Length: 400
Image (tube, rainbow, N blue to C red):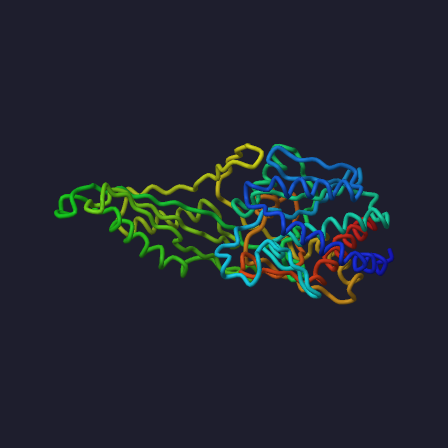
């Protein structure tokens, strides 16, 4: 295989890829509001000559190249977070501004740049005839920022799509990533007894009960597992709410939300048990502990409830998929890639995390520290190099 031809073709599409990304940035696509972005991408896939393009029931757009018996997929989530206070930005967040080095705007790194590079890779694969063995899916998935992996849980469980490999195009600074910690949300609720604030001894203050639990949770990180590759598990209280009849009433209910990051060896059951132990140490036996459901409506109108438990995943360092990715990278760029992990979470939690028979790895344009950041941007050179890698990986996998 002439990897130089792949690289040269990807570089020749640099301006085209950057302009596509600019148009995407100019098409706001917040979670649950991705309809316009899906229309744009569907047209692009059709214009690129994909063999089939469709939209699933949750609203993700799926392009297909090839009709092989084996399935691989490239994935990008196409929703973004909101820009926040636009006064903090040096330019309009959805301007899609292009200069000689970068494309600027909300979603440029996280992670519309990966989607733009994927589509360019599709053109290269078709133009150079790189694929014979596989059905290749290019998925622009929805609602990831609200609920990592929900779109892939729908694809796997409802659409019956089960690739051998999914390549995430989340930002990796063009390194190859093979895992990240899982995460989950845990809610704790306690009840008190309301009474007039002038005589608090007549009631039971739910805030005080919860405060004693929070103090125990604050100590918990020292007890959590550590892993040589993924690092340590973490837990933190992110939301604290209480209910009271009035500003002069003792609160009769308090709730907290916990953000729990899960390393190797940690799971839903062990994490809930740890929180229960915190409640016991605080002397609060009636605390209610739950893992909440995500039940928001997709732009299609569909509600697809999923539990907010997103399992840890790691692709073994001796995986043949990883070896193929490394070889493709070396063939393209004449250097060995850095193999690393994401700090944040991706759709892979419901792909390989929940379905370990489906393997994941990642390489994407952009840098993690640009995700959700003010003045977000991506290097234009990242875009064409990512596109070259995706096409080169397909070429390598077709070599056997």
